[in-house]
Image (cartoon, rainbow, N blue to C red; front, side):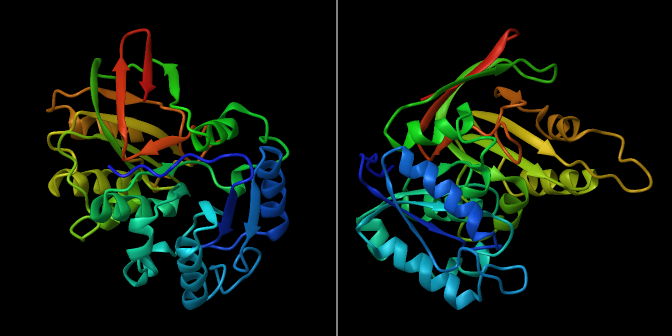
Length: 300
């Protein structure tokens, strides 16, 4: 794996919105928090813009993201928010300069498409983390926001979380990959689908009907995502939705059912995803998960 260099005080972070729109004022607040950590911040023109649900038309979002990937003065990119739109740009982005001069790309949700494409095609590590939309007056000094600062500055994190009744105990290590379940299913069968054998897989999602979670888990199973894993780490599945006739299983029960035939460790309830409790993960880097009756531990 090619791991981008950690940041130093005074380094420049770029902020752009390659998917859905966000209010510029919210991004400016987040930029102020980044500045308090000792970084400089450059906010792109897509931030605060609107084109239907997007922050800007495809060509403008593409141009701005491409410019930040190619700009050696920018040492990391923190995305404004997710939503939808990255996959519309993925095949048009030129990563030739980025491959030679990688930098940390930080985000989650729709940004999963970038994480997986970059991991599969170029072997470069990225950061699964909250975005500008998650850095607010209520959260700026909490441990989840601070976990982004610590990882950017080069710290290897260690997270503990409560045991869950559906867990399968054990200890395993491997490169951590994954992200939003909807995006992983969307990438199945494309050039962006990684080989998961020997890896730890992380999944999370929000606002999906439970039958859709079942369908997406079958997609992952039938397309090879769940075979030969070293372990499965399950984050938040928030905003559950049901049809008039309930599906009959919770999201965690659905996931458990799809992996019960395997023997690798499985941990539910890791504090990451579309929720306040959203720890920063170093995607594509070697990681260890230890699951016991008392607790779960994920560390680098």
